[in-house]
Image (tube, rainbow, N blue to C red; front, side):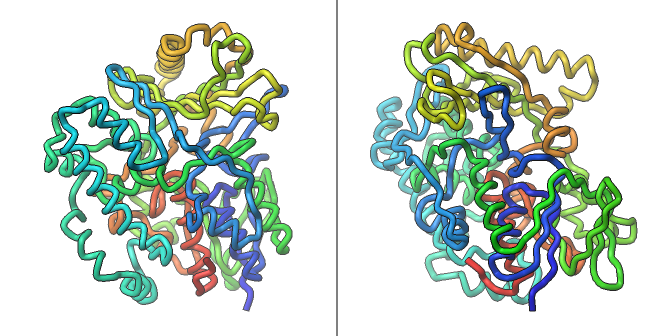
Amino acid sequence: MPQNVLVIGAGIGGLTAAALLAKNGDHVTILEASAELGGSAGKFKRHEFLFPAGATLGMGLEGGGIHERVFRFLGKPLQLEPLETVMEMIHPDHSFVFLKDRKQHVENIISHFPAYESKILAFYREIYATASIVRTLMDPLPALPPTTAKEWAALAGAIRPLHVKLLPHFNKTLGDCLERHGLGQLTAFRHMLDGLLIDSMQTGSDDVSYLLAAVALDIYHEGAYYVPGGLYRFAELMGESLTENGGVLKKRRRVTQLAQNEKGWIATDHRGNKYEADEVIVNAPIHLLPGMLPPELVSQLKKPLLEGARSETWTTLTLYIAVDSSKLSHPLPPFRQISTGEGMAEGAHFFMSASLPGDTLRAPDGYQTVTVSTHSKAGHWDTQEKYEAAREMLSERMLLAIEQQIPGFRESIVHLETGAPKAWERYTGRPNGFVGGFPQTLDSALFNSISHRSGIPGLYVCGDHIFPGGGTIGAAASGIHAARSIASKRLI
């Protein structure tokens, strides 16, 4: 029997769940607080320039990847440009190139550290082997932590004899692996890995879960893509599918209250409109959830979810820039990391994305749009004085580092604006501008993750704070788990 499902928030997780359920024949309504879909993978426009709000690098689009499976199920093909060269990684002592081909990639890394050839070969051999085993769980995609008999049964059904090989690594960090291979003190190599991990796992090699780090370091080789226009296309296609299958999508509807009634659930938006549903999926930031619910329901939330709602994550400063490419010696590459060697945050390490020449969805011919983002601690932004100082300092630090690598970059700028934490809070609804989800440390990953089951029957959560974590792949996977729980079937 079709369910009446209300989804709060049209980020990638909520849209994935909503589109799958609508395709399944359920009656689905999405309420989105902003005028745009996609949340942190959304977009905005300034004059003739279109900017991705946050996420830019397309992952999970290879055959059997999370997003590919969703779009295939929905019958919504996506225009893609596969990348053989995924990104440039510019560090103080070395400039690396991340290549899709595993063998060529490792050879390139070894060329910088020839004295460590055998150790680096052994390290990557183990990483890739571990990732290939973990990837066998991607097809069944069991939910963690399992909280029902059905989820435990699904997990047990997904386990194969080869997964025994993962057990010795379950409570290990990537740092433990580096030490075991004699690479713990190879600072430049480790710093390069940390640069990759901070962007995907929100933490570095010292603390990141080994099993998740192995997948994070390997997944680029499975397939990385430039998506013409930007990753907001994910959101647009899922929104189209939702409405084509009878779903309802309402923008500018910020939910302020969520309560139970005799029929199920009732939500109230900021305009006083009310919506009834049998089941609810909350894709809004979990920090907002306790404020939506009455106290008697807040007390029923699972402890990890409630603790997560009271915890802070990284904030970010993002620069949105348009450049006149004719003033540069070469067009900007689509993806680049720049690190000054002074840490993984506060403008000392940042990710830089640019539209490809000819992508007129993003910029007119002869121009490119650029996003530059760095991690930052919330404490640097908690007073007006600190806020303005941090914005000025981080902006200047990143622009200076870019200019050193790309002479004339500043002169080429025709538009520049900043996305500081309050802007992220205003446009994406994220309190204090918290982005990216929780760092995937041993304390918050895998069986210690936050389940998509809230602890209250009929109320589910998804998004980058929920297992399996941040990024569009993680958000989509959490949406899949929520949809499966409501549909009582695998779906994809």
